[in-house]
Image (tube, rainbow, N blue to C red; front, top):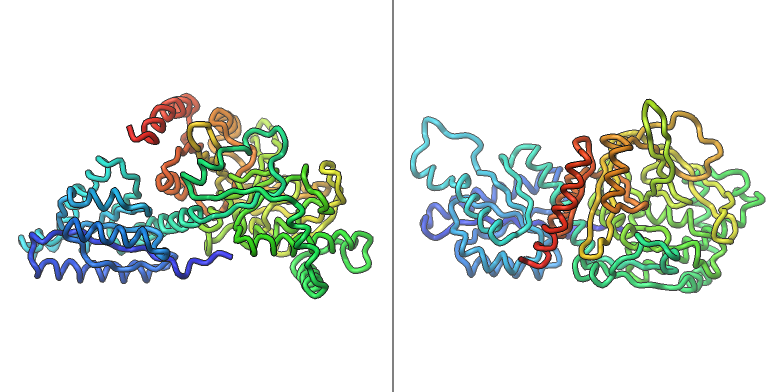
Length: 503
């Protein structure tokens, strides 16, 4: 469901012919050794590929065009071993459409005090070569990631790994198809948005389908497929007695399995990696998909409730970023508050659709309960608590003249008491800096009630994503002050107007 094996980061070293063949040979040798070291790092999830040293405008243009046209290349890492006059980079950087990371490093870690001479100085010029390169990108208003430090250090490799994961996410969004099944929950504002602009800016294609398209696939389900899936449910989850063979609600589990199989076929055949549904337009579906959505999310699909295509897309992208990392990622909603004098907390949940990747229990409980909206039969769902620990909530909203990403850093905590009557998956968290400030800032920013909750990613991932996408980012964290936050919102109105119109 998430395949990254074929993806590559290209490593490009800048120099010039001024230095002569002997120096350039050493530049190439050193660059190859750096690439070998980075490619071997466990922090970087994709292959790092060496590219020949670029020394002229034509060579730079050629490699940029190759990168743009390569399906394998998801981004470039650029480093100036020597001084590389930046005017010859202008055309290539103008053409480049892939994410760019500027690695400000040098081959050697330390000054060789007893041996250093001018030959060494002429070869190891990253300290000022990268400044020249940095200027032209700033002059061109080129968004990029800048990482400073020696390439062998864990800190640098971790940062490069974060950026490469974000590049994977951006590559995914550029090719993402979202199926919007049943349109939007009526009269809801924040889940709407400009789908044409989203495709122009992010690449994501969002199109609507009827629930009958799912029913058609459900009718194709074979008994063998159904029985195998029911066996999987019995193995992977703790079925309540009513859902076991012979139980009074067994048919509900059978119907849930058929929905999963039909929905999965529809998504696979259409090449969709994210989807939405809505309880207001279920057609012939016997129940609102709960278990099916949860399991599809666990496999890597993005989801948004009530037609929320932006959150569906963001869920998928963040799952791709988080591939192979510890901690889960899920569609989420700020559902209710726990106000106390000591500490105020948020109970996050949704009607049914919380991804079991964030479950604290190895085998969540599989249950069936009534659902008071939608007018359909009682849906099956997985019920669980989530583990404590650091997390972020992210949302993507359409502000009319631009898109905005909002991130709140939170700390998940264990429930203070048991929740025996709450028939949905849930997570309890403490907002940073506190609920009063965080909720105020979120509301001032126009943040949605739907989010993507993750314990696998940090704010740095979202910062890198916002830079690659050229989209506004507002962060609510331990340092947030409301007066400063409001000033930032006001300043961004001018900045992003100028930025998006290249003024």
